Image (cartoon, rainbow over all chains, first blue to last red; front, side):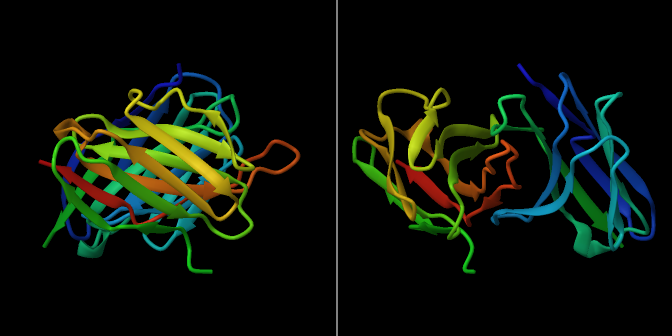
Length: 111
Length: 117
């Protein structure tokens, strides 16, 4: 069974600071997704990472994938309050369709 | 495109009642997923359809849950009878499965918040 672990699960950080969220998974996969969820809202796709070494950036967020280490990171640069949300990583299973979600990282950016 | 559409957005019902949740996937997508989200268990895949056919329903909790996809633009998730432990947010998501076997990213609907009292 594919297991996905995110850490930290809770993160409180000051505006302007940098931080990294980690996503480890247990078996081989070449598809990894990052989603954002605001309270009471749906999941919004942030990044799709499909190959080893893939790096994608959007604004203050940058995601990377190391398939050999079975690790993805979501790096936050100079955090702002608007980034406060829960971030999920999801890993594609070998069956081809299922996504296994991590428990999510609840991020709070404070002034 | 309007994205994935779900209805109702909120549903409050009494234990024992039948509940039907509805989903309209993104036009052109051939794969549809039902998820349940709770604080305790996070996001759980309930069932997956491809080309309107249920492929994997191993995540359906028990026989009280059933799902149908009569055509490419509509799916339902039914709970009968409902119980308080079914209270959760139910998401529908759709994507496109290519002939190569590669699946596009999943797009989630706004969800249905179900409360069973």
